[in-house]
Length: 74
Image (cartoon, rainbow, N blue to C red; front, side, top):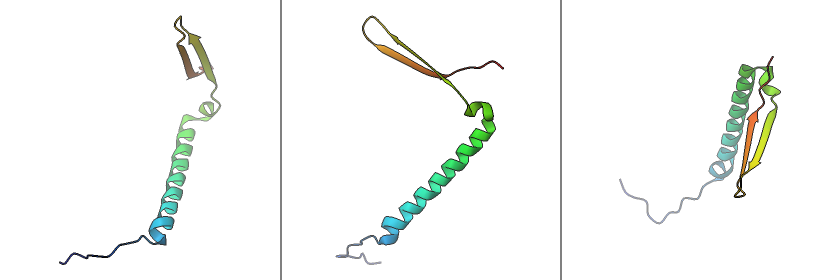
């Protein structure tokens, strides 16, 4: 088998435009599908989650911020 010399392979429209767009659309659709499955599995209570934000500062000026879902007792 001989090696091809002196030729430069330039990508066509398919490799540069069509394939990346198709991969992007497919991955976005798959992400939305999995996200909807997870939301359904968690139930309606998880969709209405509230968050609690606690912030504190120590003597040296370091700030710690904690964000967590607020627990509700039903």
